[in-house]
Image (cartoon, rainbow, N blue to C red; front, top):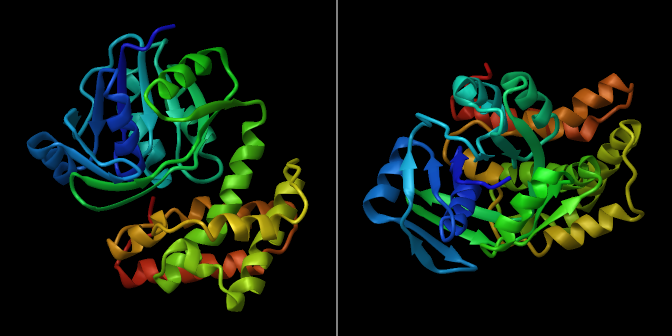
Length: 302
């Protein structure tokens, strides 16, 4: 199957980068908030960091029509998934592909419930990092994209790799998602709570906290049927120590927005209760992150 049109739905930091690179060889439209869309239309999308370039591509605040052979890259916040997909459900075609690239656990189940049988839904993850503090301007650090094994996915991988987005297929996407989630469960809340860049939380004083987060996540993940490598705590420390960006949760907090804590540490706590596994450190982080949200006046209703 060919892909004739690509929408990046929820084009914030990461989504804008995908849209920019893919626009070099494809018909792409960013779907984002009003301020960002206005900036992209009037001045272009400026990306700095691992590339320094201004991209001129289409942008809008919503999808008005979905033609045949369309790929939708879903990069909206996890808590907006159901609402976003339900809004476009009547526009979906049988050959529409939805690629989910958010952080968190349980995202694909939400999208499948919202979309029904109207599209092919694929789960993916990204190791890319990006900062988005001003409309129309993104700073990014390149990283690999991973997509679940599927015949349709092979075409997407080819498209992405052809646009300098290093991408591969995975035979065990659930395991890959869990490994990414654990990294996020460590880096996101700690960096957001302490208002520092990711690498700064790899401090000796936080070692016990970091490792307890990982151990709780691993215990819950194992109960969900996931296998993990040995010495994962040290491996995650090493990985996060190279992350010089501000985390997405940090960015949400400083912008006064809701975080994805419910889909990260919160989901670990939820699954822990399901399996009768105690997760006190992760639960504490959820409370602390929600306190920061409360101070920003963020309502907790979905």
